[in-house]
Amino acid sequence: MNAPLDQHTGLPVVAMVGGGQLSRMTHQAAIALGQSLRVLAGDAAESAALVAADVQLGDHRELADLRRLAEGATVVTFDHEHVPTEHLRALEAAGHRVAPGPAALVHAQDKLVLRRALAEAGEPQPAWAEVATVHQVAAFADEVGWPIVLKTPRGGYDGKGVFVIDGPDEAADLLEEHGALLAEERVAMVRELAAQVARSPFGQVAVWPVVETVQRDGVCNEVYAPAPGLADELASAAQELAVRIADRLGVVGMLAVELFETAEGIVVNELAMRPHNSGHWTIEGARTSQFEQHLRAVLDYPLGSTAMTAPVVVMANVLGGATADADFAGPSLDERVHHLMAHWPDVKLHWYGKGQRRGRKLGHVTALGEELAEVRARAVAAARYLADGVVDPAFAFDDEH
Ligand SMILES: Nc1ncnc2c1ncn2[C@@H]1O[C@H](COP(=O)(O)OP(=O)(O)O)[C@@H](O)[C@H]1O
Ligand SMILES: [Mg+2]
Image 1 (cartoon, protein in one colour):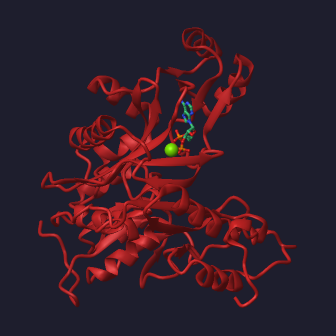
Image 2 (image 1 turned 90 degrees about the vertical axis):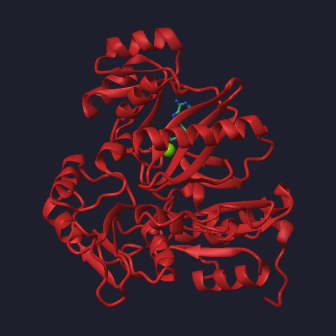
Image 3 (image 1 turned 180 degrees about the vertical axis):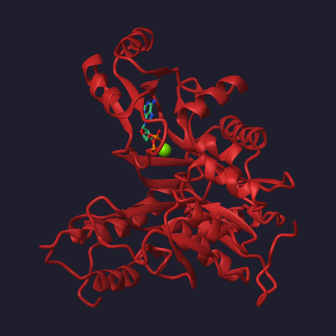
């Protein structure tokens, strides 16, 4: 079946399930390619629903809504992992293109499926076990030592569904509530890394430099590109690992491999098969952003150059802070944006248009430069000013702004 094109533009229509910031930034990239993203959003106030022209309101768990989205679209893709696998198979059976396909995507949806696949492939990962009883949890902990990490196999994000536990009692409640869980050793890590690769159906792959990601409370806060001080061999090993996984699983689109760096090397934490927080820096920091590359890959276009545009790039997330509180008495968002632009003319702002709440990802900023400490200081100060309305003393504001 020939993939449908938009009758007016003569170009493809990519339909994305999910209306969050990843979808919003993919839409931004689609515009430059002459396209307009079709978005399935749960609510008209979602980040991408606010800006895309072709928004369908619906539920990503409802097959009827997914069928409506896919009708007339060239390809269906995702800004999150939460679509039931059987619905994706039904779309494929009806002749729609789904990228990544369900057979690949399940490895980003289900952490137990991923652990089994990596074990079969002989790829490095933490010690793990599937556990359904307190007895199994205790037996696993006897092998690897307390504390251990328990994870819900499906549905988690931003650290929700990840529990560090010190003894079997805590496991009982979690097993009761969630059923079978993934148990992992708590990895003694030096830091967290991410390796991103795009893969097209043709089999072309493109990798970006490996980055360091900094999580707080399970939420990505900062990303440094390239990962500072990472040995060349380890960087190449991480990139090759990402390409091997993408090929083996038949990924189409973006793949982010979340990694832990340990004293012995790297192990795989989990996968995302979509644009990912660890790649936001590519909008300004690489010739081709992860969002454009995702579109190219799912459409089987040739992939773009991933070369960096500066020696050092730092992305800092803006997480809802003091300014999200109802009684916040400092500068308004509009004033903060104004000050930010005046003070850091070279820092790039991406604001997602979401309602403000403590801890919520509201936007991100990107800074480019030569030297990590300087670039990071700028990015972090700008993000913190937006989130808390507090000015870092190193960047004292003068009165004229
Ligand atoms: N086995 C582990 N050992 C140590 N820390 C871990 C382990 N698994 C997860 N974490 C920490 O929790 C964070 C979130 O876990 P992850 O499995 O990536 O869940 P999510 O789907 O919420 O991103 C990780 O980025 C890491 O900081
Ligand atoms: Mg994660």
